[in-house]
Length: 144
Ligand SMILES: [Zn+2]
Image (cartoon, rainbow, N blue to C red; front, side, top):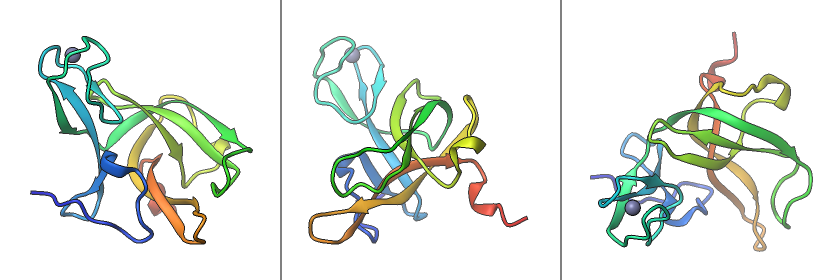
């Protein structure tokens, strides 16, 4: 069983992300037992059928970039500029996320991306915080 653990810097996504036994992040969504729809982040009421028979489900780590843009203005503490985007997972779930490890000009719609974590800003206590993000698949091995 995967335990909820706190990476350094701490993850701020609450119950929506966990770190698996292999050290890699896992997004946790909700699945509805009545209509089988999946959503992210987790909910207590199904947005499709309004049923309450929902339970946590681990979502896939790989998806495709649906759209993205560079954000220059953000709430205090968030590092700017950053790239925000939507990623479509095979689960049928569309995730709003930061896109990291590549400049905007290297991104393209429908490109394959994978889940990761990244430092996204600094909290009021001066401590850096991190959360889930997506990056182009294979972005970590670009030393060729
Ligand atoms: Zn439902």
